[in-house]
Image (cartoon, rainbow over all chains, first blue to last red; front, side):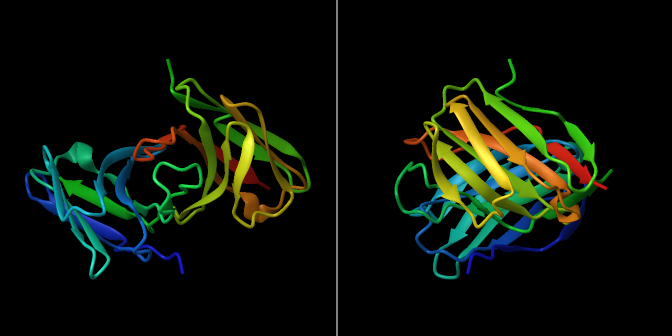
Length: 116
Length: 113
């Protein structure tokens, strides 16, 4: 199937770290992504990880990938109120690199609420 | 200098009507997509086009007909609108050969009464 699962809601205090988890389904996915959706807006790519990597760090963001368990996580360090949004993980289950059939299969989304 | 734009932003209409949503990208990308986001925020691909050619059609009812007059535009026409069509529709574009970063438009909120 094509179910990508995420927990629905996460609440943290400003300054704490946030960890958002995702379980994906297709081991052929070449890239895995984290997108952010602010209220009333479209999606914005935050970061991505290539499937042969275990970890990727990009400023306050750390992505961990466990291919054996098909588990992806996003850690946001020093979470700010501006980080409040819905976070979607996504997989691209077509192994053709950069192909036009690279649809994204999105997770169910995690609403991150940051308390001041 | 908006990268991916959609019109209209809001669309309220009656059941049974026919409506269109337009999408334009000025990024020079070859591939464009339509996604549907339902009331529970679940996002699902509907169509993708590459250089005006239909690539993906994800078992969408044939009341939905995408049209790509050129590679910078992908419009979505919906016939005989139903209550279940109420959703936010997002257009996106990407360039094959990259890591498939998809750039999303701001969305069109369709409400069918």
